[in-house]
Image 1 (tube, rainbow, N blue to C red):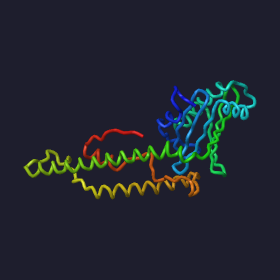
Image 2: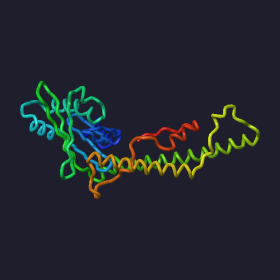
Image 3: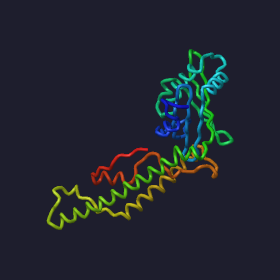
Image 4: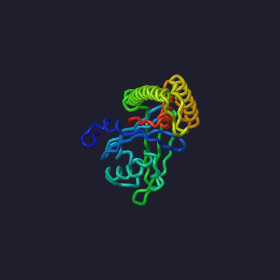
Length: 256
């Protein structure tokens, strides 16, 4: 499948992981819908699942699930895109489209999402059969981008720490030469790199513990042989964000 002449993997790689909630399970999803094909990825940060479907497979499944409907594959797919995209983007579109979606964990570790909506006055059913993604795909779409972003953020934090220490030295020089603050509330503590690092690691461990309990509550926990990456967070505040705001220092923007 290609979109606008570009390979689907390259286009999908540029798509962000979006938080979605299906039947109370918190997941991250990214998807790409072409003209008559799609590729979706789902993860609970412990396992990654995927499904790819081309025009022939979509036509076959649509007819199998909707025996009373007769339409070309483009008609089925157009409606599927209309009701499925909001469900996979974390929006409230499923309410507007009156689409119902449910998620079931299979005994073999795969997951199935069932979608029910209405097409031409008749019920329209669709099922996403997501299987465990191969390691190469997980590395390409999740692990490698996270490692690259982690390294980039680490470099930025190191640069920020160096800048703060230089500014502390500059402020101390001003004080030693008789400079005083006009407003006491502007005074800041001296940056302690070791204290900052210890605080950072404590928060990382705390988030890891929280996410582990979240996964267990969701019921999507995988065997220990499966990919486990619960220590990676997809939202929340990095400890250095607060530090940046307290010192009013602009940190260059970067995105995954």
